[in-house]
Amino acid sequence: MTRLIFLGPPGAGKGTQADNLSRNCDVPHISTGDILRAAVANATELGKKAQFYMDAGELVPDELILNLIRERLAEEDALAGWILDGFPRNVEQATFLDELLKEINQPFECVVNLEVPDEVIISRLVNRGKEEGRSDDTESTIRHRLEVYRERTEPLIDFYRSRQQLVSIDGNQPIEDVNEDLAKVVQV
Ligand code: ADP
Image 1 (cartoon, rainbow, N blue to C red):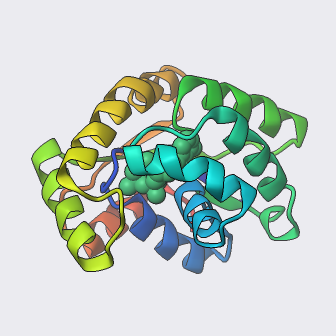
Image 2: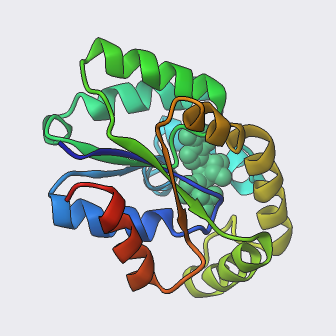
């Protein structure tokens, strides 16, 4: 059963790797960033509330995210497995996820931590901003997202490592090589 969590700074390649794996394993790729961007594009209530935080490079408040995850994991396609990308992003979300997974009896396989140095991240994201026009991929917002990552999300590395649930992979190599490293550590 494929149930994986991708961890890593913005621009580490979580989305790319999660997408690939989700196709190979035939399980949904659940990206809270994608869900939120769709909500913004469709101007839903969630989107209207989330946009301000996203544009500022801040985390969207947990109250907007937790229910969304609970509902998404309850959908039919998620019963056979999933790949989480962008969630959990702080200790509160990780604790919530622990409780939720216990409640629905769905243990996860492991947490994949993609490691990429800061300077590589910044140049990747600046390029993505130019190519895709994502409104949060400007240099000052990118730097702020990295700070938020260090402060709020990075503690999850120790959180999962201390429970021996963490697998770290070098994300600063060609996509195919990351793929290969990943295939060595997760069951596909
Ligand atoms: P990146 O990993 O490049 O920062 P994402 O697509 O994962 O991009 O997220 C974009 C934005 O969406 C974040 O900066 C944040 O505002 C919001 N977001 C996504 N996931 C979460 C989450 N789990 N909790 C809070 N905010 C989130």
